[in-house]
Image 1 (spheres, helix red, strand yellow):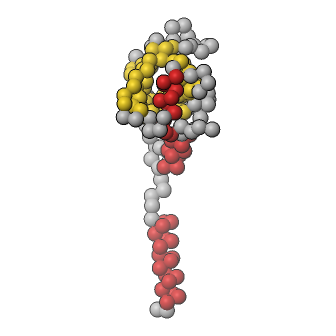
Image 2 (image 1 turned 120 degrees about the vertical axis):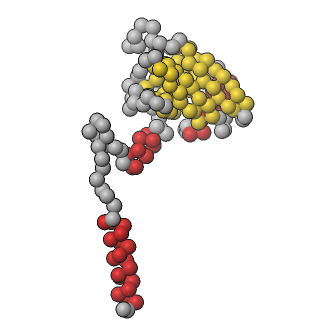
Image 3 (image 1 turned 180 degrees about the vertical axis):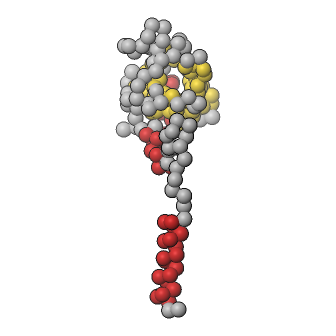
Length: 171
């Protein structure tokens, strides 16, 4: 066999293995929906690396499909947390009067308590927003390598989200 024929044979075999050897069917989940492809899952994850509806950093609250959006204002020194639905677009509410944010900044643990600051339309006794005016918290959020966790009760269940302040971008 000539070198050219051998090269073309190897190329064709490699292409056939790449294109035709996988099972392209997706199985449906219990709701009859196809599971997300790797690309769709990556896109969902990628969407949370960007701004939420209030211009803040979105994190996932594990175990429930809910989200929290973390905002801060360098001028007013107000740090806020908005509770959001599974699509990270619409507000959801909690009966909690406070939300605790635990951070580790330069290896030092810090704890902050944000109080309920209901938005217009929140049901009586519930809040979709929590905030705290605290210069140290805003500075901690801006510090390199800040990590942490927040916890909130939603519908009688506790949910937590991991905070990695390095993932949020500054303009």
